[in-house]
Length: 530
Image (tube, rainbow, N blue to C red):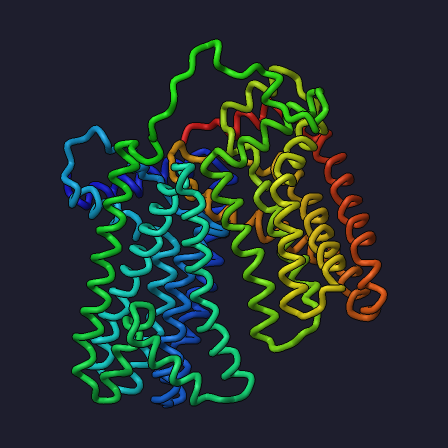
């Protein structure tokens, strides 16, 4: 079995997944249109330096822009889109395939898709700039840089998501996974701060020095080869090419190791103590004492347990926790302002609710138990939100405290918490209905970031719709916080909590009725074969 067979299989599965599914075709077309717009924008941004004839601008823009593209391939799958795993590696576990053939085939198949094509077209703008500034030789070298850069993007995305997924399957390693992701996000801080500070002070010399450093890292090296030829630094081209190729090789080796462990099922299979039937806890002990002994309490306890133990849900919790802390802090510090970031806090609150946009898809056919039991829609949705909020609530408190300390305004911590709750409640109003009307099935794989064809676009669109809806709904609060700042400091918590609760109750009422009518259709949707 050669690599081309993997590519053909990926194309065949993608086509079969679109056949007879009008909503998937629509999402695929919409995703292709958005990707085309992004590709054209990237091409224009990368080619501006060449069109203006600015050699030094190209040495700054190309490596920094390329680094942004590579980091986008790293973080966007973790946060919004997931990774397309139409070819589930676990399905090849019983086939006598050499590891090199398997990794090469899966890697080649990952390059067949809309994101890879859009990235390739967008980064061709660097070739345009190199050709305008240095002629055919510089353009040819930059073509090599674009190709190796695309390979680096795919290798980085696949290896990191696979390694993170493997770590999350082991409950003992989840804390380590959290720390690693937090450290990775923290490493972006100094670069972001240096670039923004240089731009705000018009210190282009500082920005250029940052670009020179980035150009010698795997992030910017592929996109700085053309400018090196333009500047006459031919000796730098093979060195940077070696840096990129070695990085790709190491990433693929890492991916192969984590993929092999996942296929063999060795991750997280620690020695569990065998319990006899007499040692197993009674059903009553599965529901905490502080929850009511009702159907709502039992479902809430189940959701709390699922959110911590199921790898897909746990991945969402960890990713939100890291981004929720770092995003407002980095925005505040990089802007150099001590004003309270109310709008950003609303965004973070809405981002938390996005995890529930496909809450029924997490369960798949297991949702049939609730359908057979006849759980009312409002009870079903309320218990799911309550179980998820048991983890989101403490995270909100931690975020509010951190932002208050960073802005040196501890008195504003309650107002920050109110903004978070308001954004969360308003996003829930949109998310609950979307989870009933726009649910989609997830592939049967241990990778918590895996998406079937079209699933990544659906996840991204649902996320953006929920965030935009929350931003528009909380606009009066944001304006009030801006114009009546002193009043907002003491009224932010009660007003924000009431605002968010009103949005949640409205969304619960509408989505509950819809769920009562659509239980069979919803079950058929989330349990569809991938």
